[in-house]
Length: 192
Image (cartoon, rainbow, N blue to C red; front, side, top):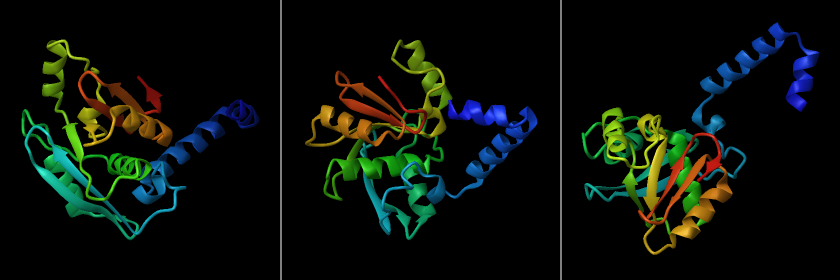
């Protein structure tokens, strides 16, 4: 309702110009300012341990240091979260790593606890193949944009992982108990 009253007070052109300026500013903002968790007290360092269940590769990295993304750490994350079927890598969304970091915090996990990764990046070709096989794969999956991950946490009930993820309200949360994972993405907040 508030947006509608603002729109009524501004001319259509003024409203569109303001909207465009806002979107441009948001797109150009640094990760630290754009983060959905910007209102959280930010630690000096953010680290993750990721274990790719398909390749057996594991990475333990500090991806955030003193207010900045660590590019070398993100490169390592991109390699480990590559499409395990095709070998293709993709630049994973730093906000997705932030979401995992805060999930780790929410679950009160020791820093060395890995996230078992069932799926990170998925190439369009792999995504199409999985859809043809009749798997529950979205046509425009966030996995293809480096903005989604399917995880499990060793020693933690999947329901608890899902509950903690939902409490963060950081994007989409899918619950797949039959397959043993929780899906997280940095898209719009939604639940399935």
